[in-house]
Length: 207
Ligand SMILES: O=P(O)(O)OC[C@H]1O[C@H](OP(=O)(O)OP(=O)(O)O)[C@H](O)[C@@H]1O
Ligand SMILES: O=c1cc[nH]c(=O)[nH]1
Ligand SMILES: [Mg+2]
Image 1 (cartoon, rainbow, N blue to C red):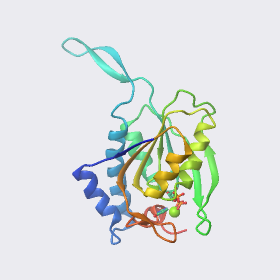
Image 2: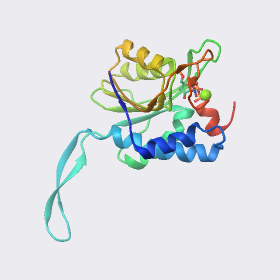
Image 3: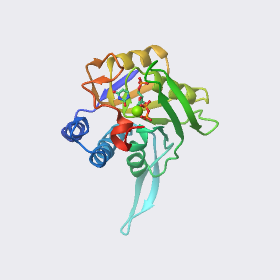
């Protein structure tokens, strides 16, 4: 499994806004959108392209098109905050949806929605979820994708805990992880430390 930490002053500044307990829901959503643009920029650095012949107003030239745009899959709820930014940079892409809620007692994910294309063989997939904590939710979401044939999955997250990275590494799933930070650890409640709290609640309010 390859893990890339985006090391950029703009990413660090937006991440600081997101972490700050004083940041209100609207400002959190705006900063998450901006940080997501940077994560997607990094995730698309090596995607497959094809040459296309075009005519400028002046002359013929060879341009570039995306050969196989990735399927974008936000994990509800919190991943919704990364969805609009990903579609802005990848207007050619389609979007699927997975809904997961972690049981805060057992820390196990419960799936409540799956809206994905049947066949994902040969199709790159970008999974969008700001938080990789125990890794249970992302392992479950990525398992849904591999069961449909996906074999190139890139996970975009804002924060990753070492415990979650280890779990995904051990899962043997075909993953690349792009994150803005690998934080210190999980606390006894399964929250990332220092983290940012509950990414769903911080965007949309507590449920
Ligand atoms: O790595 P894990 O330990 O599984 O935790 C991470 C999950 O927790 C959060 O979702 P949550 O279950 O809180 O749902 P929400 O997005 O609706 O708030 C987050 O968005 C991840 O999906
Ligand atoms: O710190 C955490 C852990 C899981 N889910 C969150 O939203 N935040
Ligand atoms: Mg939540």
